[in-house]
Every structure is written in C-alpha cells, then in structure tokens.
Amino acid sequence: MQVWERCSLYLAFQAQAAPIPPQIPTSIPTLDPDTPTLQPINADISGEFTDPIFKQAVWEWLGKSGEPGAFSLSDIQNRIRDGNTRLTAAYRNISSLKGLEYFEGITHLTCSNNKLTGFPPLPSTLQSLYCANNQLTTLSDLPVGLRYLDCGYNQLTTLFRDFRKSFRSFHGKPIIGGYIA
Image 1: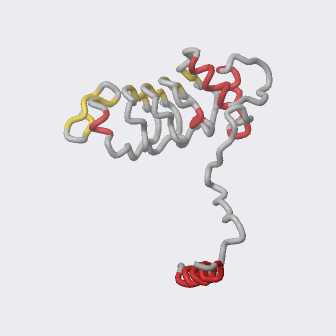
Image 2: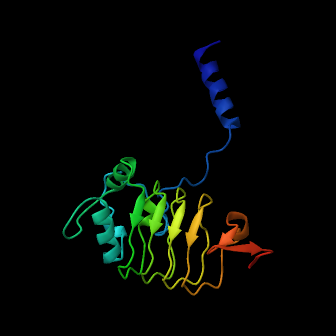
Image 3: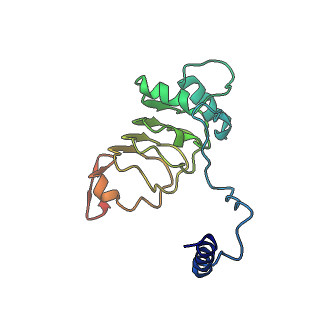
C-alpha cells in the first residue's frame, strides 16, 4: 500500500466518525450561593457563628479566654478527639446555634434557658439534648441516636415524625398510642 493510499483510507475513516459537537462550553457554570464549598480544615470558621454569645460559649469550650478570635474545624475536632464531647451553652440568652453543624462528635448538648426558636442541623452523634426553657415551637430532624430529650417549657406544637419510635416516654410520662399519658 502506497503512502497516498493510507492517507486516503485515513481520511475516509475520519469522514465516517461521529461529528464534533457544534458548541463546546466556554465557561464554568456558577454555583448556587447556598451550596456549601470545601475549605481547608484549618480555615477560620468563627464567622459562621452568627450569635456572638454562642461564639463566646464555643470559644470557652475550646479552652480559651477573653474575646473570641479565629478558630477552625480542626480546633473543634481536636477538642472532641481529646474527649470533650459535652457542649454547654445554657443560661446565656443565645438566640441562634448557627455553627453547631461543625460539632460532629459531641454526644451531649445543653442549651436550656436561652432564646432559641429552632436548631441548625444537629450532629448525628448527639445522644442527649437539653433544650428546656426556650421558645421552640417544633422539633424536627433530631438525630437517630438521640436517647434523652428535655424540651419542657417551650411552645412546642409539632414533634418530629418518628417521635414515638425513638422515645418511649416524654418528661417521664409514658407515650401510649401517640399521646402522652
């Protein structure tokens, strides 16, 4: 086979291949502003804690004193890894626990006697939640592993879907047929 024959065979093959798409994307689509982005584990997340009183409670839980400064997810994880799995933020007039989603690994949360009206996503590792004396109207999406819940003295009108399956009693009173006895 001559060189020119190989070239024409190659060109004939190329002509039968799938056509090239008429338009190739020239830009990267933008993300929705609510889409979480990845950040380094040692990046400053203190700005995520929108309630300054809760931020102060976290700062103290980290073993620091004075005005809250910068802290990272790594700081929180190291503290939990050291065995500090209880977070207490009671009697402080806190209105938001925004930032609590960074506390994966805590098992006990005490946030009683504040001004809370709701919760951010709670850590899946949470076993005990003390949230009495707040302004909560609903409890939804509680962690599956939650075993103790003290939510008295709130304005609760709605409990989460699987409440009866998760808890056999409510404030020490048995739950019978979906009603508190």
